[in-house]
Length: 539
Image (cartoon, rainbow, N blue to C red):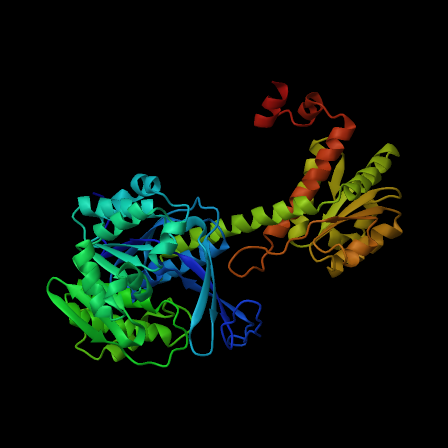
């Protein structure tokens, strides 16, 4: 058992970015519809979703200490989901080795009905071995464990339930898709049957329950009774939208009416219901009161767009208004993540942005453009001329580095102070020299003045810019692309990825010159006799 603080509820399963679309109606094959705008921000809204993450979020709203485990990806969608977990105090124990985070395209019509297309991503890649090897101790920290049959493979579901049973921990299984769909995509019939028998509390959707018990009709209570008898469950709860739910348990059987609400979006209503039910059971409200609290969560969920609660305080207030009973002894509202965790996520996100931008730049670099830049410098050096590197702002620091790198690898180069060029420093440039000018925008006023001045001195110009079509790109003899789409960081404004791109483009240029000059280890050692690199050059 881990020494970490215990959890009221831990879950594994769907963690999904919902891409929500509003449409006047859900269309059939070969039909078209015009999407509505959403809040003035276009036709698509990104929202937190997923069967398990949704019900953990609603349980956290009602004061439970929750945790989530499983596999996710180190991508932008994953960071979006993890930020939501942190805001709601959902402790996470995640393997970020998945290929991609789960995504769902959700189409919601004017009546609140929806159609969902899912790409399970990392959730589908989670197997029994991952659960057993990576998450068993986390499971044992929980007072109750919850999982789902929706996107998670059945062998992983079975392993979660087995670990929970061995540890004496009550388990919950949300059967969110029809059994035939689960067998087709998540495992075989034997694995499904074993999972349904292993869970202490079974919550199938009504459509799933009717497929499992076709002779029980459409009444939720009759379905719950039939499934409890078939699987020997401690309790079975079948939901029926705004009509409420049917419960068959050892100490309670009955139907609990729902809350009639004008639905905006029915996505995730069952997930919210389960979060409220588990909160009610945790607070020992009894089955009927817990179900009323669950119905209130489901109603609060469908009043808005998206399945995950938006604001913990507002969501709790609305749930308690709809619940209408004596307020249960709720725990504190979830708070924001510790700054250190948020900072780590942002730092990793910035690295991911830079990695992606550099990869894109590598695909975009034109060999012929690099060749023209090498030719220009080669011709200048062959005539006894020199190379200068300049920039303004952050590119000034890049220019210092580039001049030093070039000089240490066989291409004599000096830093040229851009703002001093028009105050006399243009004198360090002579006709036939090459000036490498660096500017992300390619429009920096001081750099324009410097380039015009060195042009009058007879120098050739190589531009390194994020905008090849800019002033610098148009007025350079050769323009090297160092463009990025995103910088990274919380605001996305400070130069981060663009500086990395400029540095690496110049480092690549230096590598080409080093190769062409026939530069040797002895040449390097002559210029760098001290330090570790000096030692390596001698070995």
